[in-house]
Image 1 (cartoon, rainbow, N blue to C red):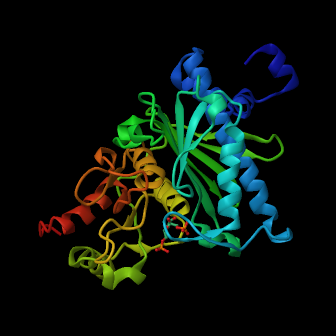
Image 2 (tube, rainbow, N blue to C red):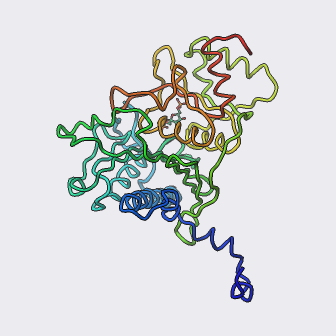
Image 3 (cartoon, rainbow, N blue to C red):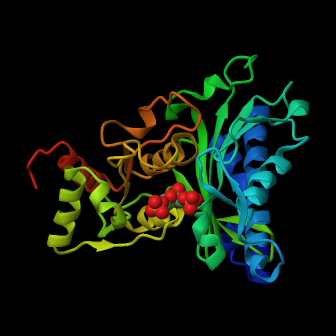
Amino acid sequence: MTSTQTEINIPEHSLDRDCTTLSRHVLQQLQSFSPDAQDLSSIMNRIALAGKLIARRLSRAGLMTGALGLTGDTNVQGESVKKMDIYANEVFISVFKQSGLVCRLASEEMEKPYYIPENCPVGRYTLLYDPIDGSSNVDINLNVGSIFAIRQQQGEDLDGEAKDLLTDGSKQIAAGYILYGPATVLVYTMGKGVHSFFLDPSLGEFILAQENIQMPDHGSVYSANEGNFWQWEDQIRDYIRYVHRHEGYTGRYSGALVGDLHRILMQGGVFLYPGSVDNPDGKLRLLYETAPLAMIMEQAGGKGSTGQQRIMDYIPSKLHQRTPAILGSKKDVDLVLSFINDKGDK
Ligand code: AFP
């Protein structure tokens, strides 16, 4: 501690922490001030701005006229669209307009990618995102999240079909989520560990909370919609019967993947959304949900599997590809896989 700090009694570590904003952290992660590093730092800053705008809207939505409820439309997935889905989807587009950073945005809410032509000559990045994940929670004031991944555009995409996005999860330069809970938390990885940031409303900044998060190898939580029990394959039903019959397991399921996964990241356990008889690929989308979250899990020492292969290795055949998902602590994911592979070693 310097003499000046001693005299005015400023705790150095807390000041450093308050100054570790998200954009500064990205530059530290990349150990560079190169133009590429600056671009990624700016992209993360704009994602954070989207998160702040969405958090603000969510906190006031109950007091506003026309902010909650359904639009009356259905999206490309055939699901009813909420007004907050549309708002959040447009927020992500707006924050990237005239940024020169991102040429295309692909979202769960849009059938085709959204191009920002003024950015395209220089913006070599694509943002993939689920603007509001768990939107059934919005109208009742429970937690929801946004999920994102950043990829670099490959090739010229002359036909405007964004086919270069149909690649595996290793092409994600960064991935993460924003959890809108009692506090707003942003969690991200750039392939060098997983880091969390809390939104400090008084500063309007995401401030570093935890660096290099490592999740426990095992946790007590299993998180699945057991209402689908009779739609699942026998092996998944056997796994659920196993956790019912053994001590040390507890079920937690909120209907919003980001919150459920955040609990598992911090405390261990497993989230599963398996395929069903009618929908063998399950419900969750690879590019906007399972691939970004699998990257987070792996970077924190956990695992992400479809049941048949590593989620990160899965190559989609279409933009809105769905995959079954088993995400969480190593031992807990392996336990589910052992039932799927029916190794009989339980
Ligand atoms: P919505 O955003 O359409 O509510 O879907 C949320 C979600 O994609 C994920 O966040 C949940 O874990 C899962 O679907 C909930 O689906 P079920 O209602 O079928 O359990």
